[in-house]
Image 1 (cartoon, helix red, strand yellow):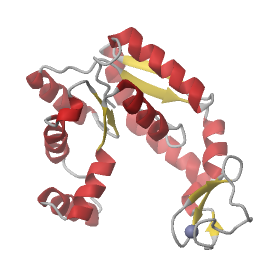
Image 2: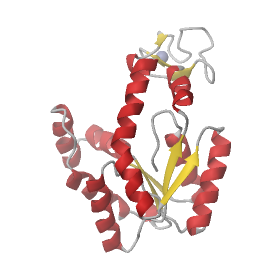
Image 3: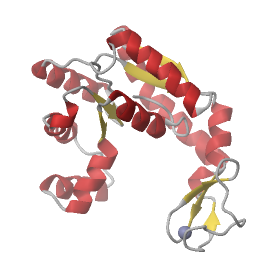
Image 4: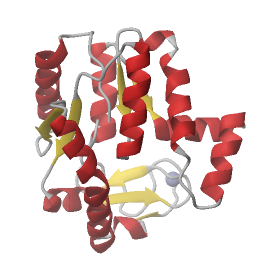
Amino acid sequence: MLGPPGVGKGTQAERIASEFGIAHISTGDMFREAVAAGTELGKTAREYMAAGALVPDEIVVGMVEERLGRDDTRKGFLLDGFPRTIAQAEALERLLQTLGRPVTAVVDLRADEELLITRLSGRRVCASCGATYHVQNKPPKQDGVCDVCGGEVRQREDDRPEAIRERLREYAAKTAALTEHYSRLELLESIDASGTPEEVFGLVSEALIRRAGVGTHQVAG
Ligand SMILES: [Zn+2]
C-alpha cells in the first residue's frame, strides 16, 4: 500500500488487514519493535539510523522474509512502508517468486495536496506524553491542554503548512518511479482517498475483491 503523509494509509491498512483476515506488515513498526527489544536486527538497524543512513535493502528484505514465514500470513498479507525504492521492489519480487506468493495488487491512495495540507496542519501533539489530537476531528477537551496527562498540546514544526508541502514534494519525488513500475506491471490500483475513511475503505475493498477475491490476495507497497 502506497500513500502520502496524511492520506490515511495506516488507518486503511489496519482495517483491510482485520476485515480481510490478512497480516498487516509495517516495516516501520517492525524496526521500532526490533530496536526496542534489542534484537540483533534491532542493533544493526539502530546503527544505521544513528548514522543517519537508510537501512540496507538486504536487511529489510530479510526481515520481511522472516515475517512472511509466520502463520498469520497464510491467508495473505499487506505490506505497509515497503518497498520504497525500485531496488526494494525488485528484491521483493524475487523473494515472492521464490515463495510462490506473487503480489496481486498495489493500492495507491491519492488525495489533493491542499486536502492533505489541511488534514496534517490540524494535527496537534502533547509535548509531554505524545498523545495526538486534531483541531477539527479530535480536539482536546480544553484548548491546548492534553486530556491524558494535562501537558501542553501544540503543533509540531513539521506539521506546519510549509514543512508539509516539502514532505509531500519529497514523497512524490521518491514514489513516482515506484508507481510507474507497478503501473507497467498492471498491479496499480489508484484509489481516491479524499472521502471519509468508510468511503475509502469501500473503494479499496472493491478493488481488492476485483483483483483477487476475499482472503486470497496479497498487497504490497
Ligand atoms: Zn499528554
